[in-house]
Amino acid sequence: MRHHELPPPTPRTGRRRPVSVAVALAGVCLTAAGCAGDGGPEPGAGPETVSRPASPAHSPTPSARQPSASAGSPSTGATSTAPLPRGPLTGRTVVIDPGHNPGNRDHTREINKQVDIGTGHKECDTTGTATDAGYAEARFTLDVSRRLRTLLEEQGAKVVLTQDGDRAFGPCVDERARIGNKERADAVVSVHADGSAAGNRGFHVILPAAVDGGAADTARIVAPSRELGVRIAGNFARVTGSAPSNYIGGNTALDTRGDLGGLNLSTVPKVFIECGNMRDPEDAALLTDAEWRQKAALGIAEGIGSYLKK
Ligand code: ZN
Image (cartoon, rainbow, N blue to C red; front, side, top):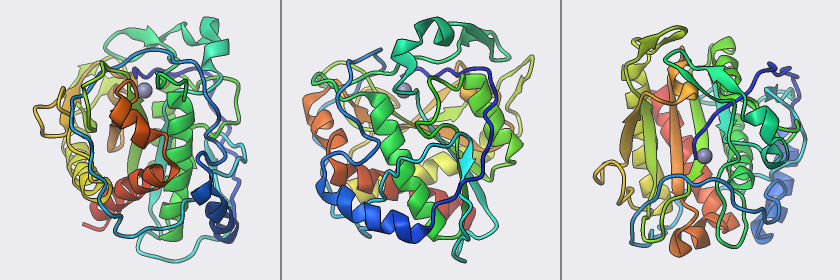
């Protein structure tokens, strides 16, 4: 859905979870339809875009890693502190932005406040969408983001989440962007799922348009963000078997927007990914499946890895 964010800069507490713990939890997650962090159903909130038909084929996951458990440890702008294993991403910093926040629905006044996105003003954040059965986008984004964190940390990357279920609402979109900037992240990915009409299916990656206004100046991130987005799209399609959106991007799986504060205010390479359409029954069946979410996280992780190792 539309992304926005809020004010208070989040404390980046450095909290780290030992990978071993995550792995253990992952096992649990595998069977549970919803790992921690994917909470139960929530009323759907706002709609977003939709996608088209076709059921995503699940291709066997290349590397089926264990689903990382969505460890429920809270942390905002949180990073793990446990010693990271050395790997191909050692020395790299990746900021993961779980779209929305399960608590946004209970803080409409706060999230409806306008924030400056450089080219204009937008709501601090939005509630996000949900499946018809009530599985909230905010739960989906947090679950996939935690799985993604585990996968990247296993490769040695320093990973920071803009929110980890540890705050009542938000952050606002401008703060989400600032977290990536402050970390001088090598790559930032904002995780979402769309809320379009049934029949609209598939995934797409949103790239920053060239914008210049106020605090927004994306001139230097347009090209690297596109490279990052193309690699994520290709790997996401390969690992999940999902098809590019049939309603946005003309089957390229890529869309470019200049109206998102989270992209406009970023000074580091950043993209959004809409993993599927929560309002389409076939896509919803995938998005609510823990094994599929692990594939989604893996596809994104491999795309990021491909970009960072290029
Ligand atoms: Zn969203």
